[in-house]
Image (cartoon, rainbow, N blue to C red; front, side, top):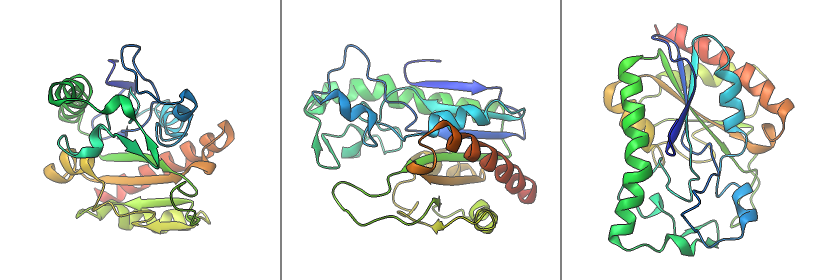
Length: 240
């Protein structure tokens, strides 16, 4: 574990690696974001439920979870290093005044969080290549800045490589779920980590977005950990 990432479980060659870029709401003591601390429990700071789901999945043999260990408000590891939102000055209508950094401060934040996160993930994938990377995120039932409800219980996202998605979508639908194909947004827009570590190297991956009310408590987290482990294994076997 470092301040940029944590690894749960034991990675296995041919297993499943669950990757969560937004699994933590931790803000280091020496960083002041200048926000109401209550915001750190909301979606702008963390993907609610994914740390717990990933942790439960990593208790299974053959599955490990690689998770960001700092809030996306400190550094968003699923954004290009030069994208404005990598260290956001605002999120869903909330200003983040502590992120109004000069160039040196911006670069220091990237070197402290973004670079070691991706270096460690790259090294892990090389040392224990998984059969499937499961990119796990969660999304809100609606955004504060847009009150349109999001009916999908789970979304499957991808960029150019849709091999795993095409297998997973009918499996999820068979569970009786409302499944979004490139919903609530497209993986062609926000897919930096998987573009870099999966698509660039031809590694198969499954991009999963679970609606937060599905995994907001321990019962839902257990249900989804079992479901995603089962479906992830089924997808991995059919990709062989």
